[in-house]
Image 1 (cartoon, protein in one colour):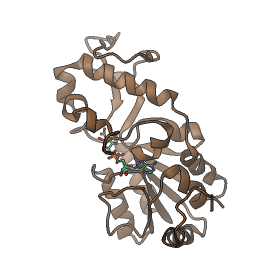
Image 2 (tube, helix red, strand yellow):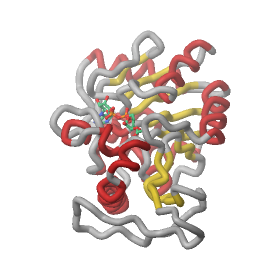
Image 3 (cartoon, helix red, strand yellow):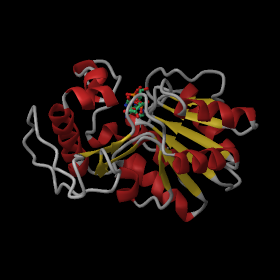
Image 4 (tube, protein in one colour):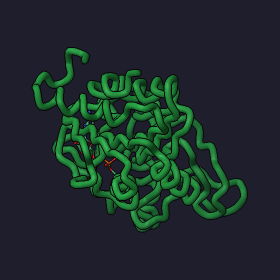
Length: 256
Ligand code: OAD
């Protein structure tokens, strides 16, 4: 065990139980949320004081209605987040997940819109909530490339026009009230139900349908391990709780 995981008997017992659940080398699903990238410097949504939804109102920034109401504000906010995510380095947790592919099949199912799993080296990553880097026209849906975001945050920024018509570039993320990308969702359900274990990392477990995946695994008899230093909305579907930050516990949990 590394020296910076919690050094209590309870934690050591939980880690040992979790490692046992992962033994056997079958396919592993890692379901990640914003806490996975917290140690990379990307803010979560709901952590007290540091979470984005503590400082910003999601109804003003993350809904189709917000886009219709004040497109330039929404675009500026997402371009700021794109800059933050693009300059954040993968942390020890992302790297441990990627390295686990050396000894077993690993599918990452993420609610995160950053690309830190991919930059750490994970090869199969399903983005349930889209990507900050995949812009598309808000009218015809074709991909658009608005160029790199500027480092300086601004309150308002006009999104570029689509060359094919009257549309504008919009962020390629899933807003509240929108459907998840069906291919990513179906692939995630299939990976979860075919896994030998599911490790849930850094999610409050409050946003559906992603939050229903741990229960789906549990109903199928698949062990579910949660890595989260704080409380979450997950309950009886979790077999082992590892109450520690992702970057500290995942290298110990996922090493061969
Ligand atoms: P939340 O911000 O809701 O939850 C983050 C979780 O990460 C919390 O449970 C924290 O305790 C935990 N956490 C914080 N630091 C951690 C660390 N170092 N290691 C492990 N865990 C840590 O984020 P999500 O659950 O991802 O959706 O939020 C789900 C969705 O709500 C997001 O994808 C986004 C948001 O609104 C959309 O924008 C559609």
